[in-house]
Length: 478
Image: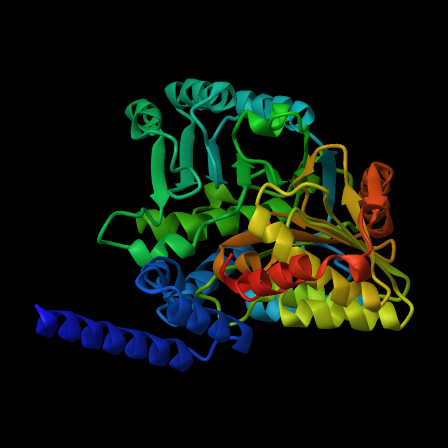
């Protein structure tokens, strides 16, 4: 028995060493590498299990041939899109080129945008769009719960499927883990095409539990698109417990819907292996039908994922911060920033740019909240202003800068969104829309308290600061 014990220890030691070497050879960010090595060293057995589920790097695996897929869908958009008098703003040409060169995210003009700041505004507009659908409904969603909101949407989609409208739905298998398969099977039996994204089944795909489709994209008839932070669940209307839910979602008509359609169809190929490029899904731009006024509201739909060569959305945030002249206002429910984001925020603030960050006063994840405090100290020292939203849980993911550039989508300012998740944001270049997004931010700021009102970081007890710093080591994994 003694020999068995020692053999087990030796085998376990070999597994630990091999895993650590694998982590080192992945050449990830040093902070992420150190975090995993610490987990493997100080959490026996549990560390191996966590790495198996959350740590394996699929960036190099290229789960799908993304570059060839992008080329195909780019050709389909270029074939169908006709943009007269497209003018790119010189002040943001480098940012536009960044997305166009890396993500093949084409800039589209003539966009009209409605902004919804809660579920009471968004869901009625979404259900109305479903009711008016004539051709197809395409949806990528992270969470779809079997609750009153989820069932209301499911019933509306079933009604359209019975009318002969094509309905395709992708839901994230982990995000919708609590939703029983019977809920989706009911829709599938009514003719709706449904696929889970990277289903987690033991032992297959268990390492993919860490790589989730966090996007919230809806396309109706190729003419109307929705994107933002809201999922299909009751809490996005009523909130959780005593906390009302604050979120931001956009309704878009115009050229940017082509970009949303392309993002969906790439995801559809991912789950269904069916390549869809028909003109049917890229109808004439609404301006040709006189339903949207000609304007120069430019938009780029930018996606990022763990199989991409570059972290596109994170690079966009860094570029905006580094090019800002007057201000950058940001909202995020979670703040576990990568080193480039911290560097860009501090650099912008030190140069005199008014950099503001808004996060919830009470997070829905304690570990995340503790880790966040250690990052806040870094940016506060550089002059970044931090605001805590106190009127509920603020799940918004938005940014606005210099009364011209703005973005909204599914991306949080954290390691998971920038590095591990499949995300989507729309970046806009338009003064009128930027001012509207800015107004949303300032209205939220009126319901905030400052860092000084919450706590003085210099006077936080030593044990609390030690706790926050220790948890920070795990922030790339949270």
